Length: 262
Image (cartoon, rainbow, N blue to C red; front, side, top):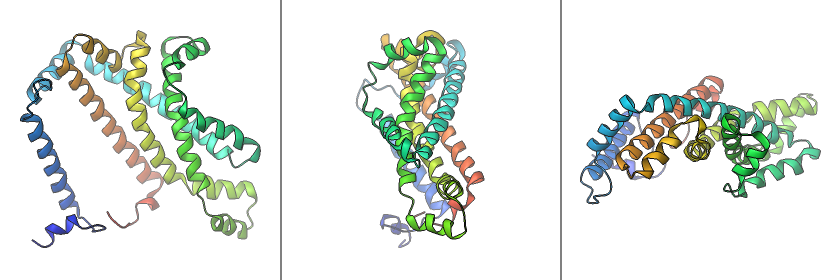
């Protein structure tokens, strides 16, 4: 019994079986609270399940999820490319003010952007993609720029002792040396993208998507349907999250060496 209580101690190692048991206990606790929640406003699991089945069969929820996911894949890919380009180019002194300007755009209010972006990109898919890329990019650029800025001087000095020029040093130390952390930053900021996606699709309704469905169901106070869509989006986001972890494991296996507090 003493070993079980070690899960309440900081910095203790937890085995795979213990992790699964703890996850199961959390899920049981959440489901129990959901089933016996006193509030009449929040629908029960059976109602949400029935709403999901009805929307899947009759309202094209599956196709809307595919449309939204494809839009998100395009946005996260382009936002990642732009963010890495901005952050890595910040090693050039001439580019640092521009990178700083991009990072400060994260404080820009999103409410007034649709009109400006409509004037720049038109409507439809391009507008939706541009808004989503911007929403992800300003935060992702900040994250990657911080990762690049935190590289220690001794790593640069070590690369220089191998007679590398500054371009080679930048490639080996800044780009390759931090790529595992960059993947983590992309994974974390992808969550911002999933939060922004329904709102962007609600603004640009011409292509449908889960955001358009949520707004339509909200308008008619169909709370079970809204929860069913939100849970579907969350499940899709979790699948994407695990795919990014798999990519990281394949591309940067050294990042999975044994660490403290696993």
